[in-house]
Image (cartoon, rainbow, N blue to C red; front, top):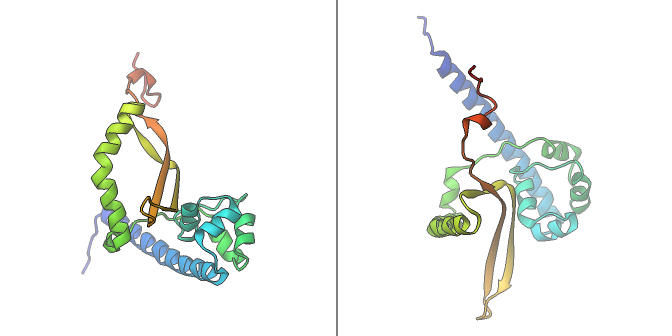
Length: 183
């Protein structure tokens, strides 16, 4: 029996296999990185202080959601002496950034998402009022988590999003260099 597959279906199947292998590799690397961090006994904030990075970026590096830059590698190694060459080399590669939809079931992540969704329209309106028609970059972006005391003396969580403003462009044909010019 001969079964013919649609070429685009084969490509889709191959892509899913590659993604699955990348995800499995990422999970293994993240587990090893977590072991190194736990063995150090340091918090993300302590590692951040030693490296000059934000605490969230350190967490992103150790979760393979961010790319370790060559200039930062020695600082991270000093902060986490048990990092192996293999782990550092893996971290120097662009990561397979991913999102697991099941993460939303974790209460802290659910509440963060809920806060952004709940306040999102108002934040967008203020961005538009203060900057114009545009968005906040999540690429040229800094994020940190801090602990402060509220006026009632209770602990409060401060999450700071610090993103570059990106204005939307008016799409004039004359500025679109990729289009062939008609004579």
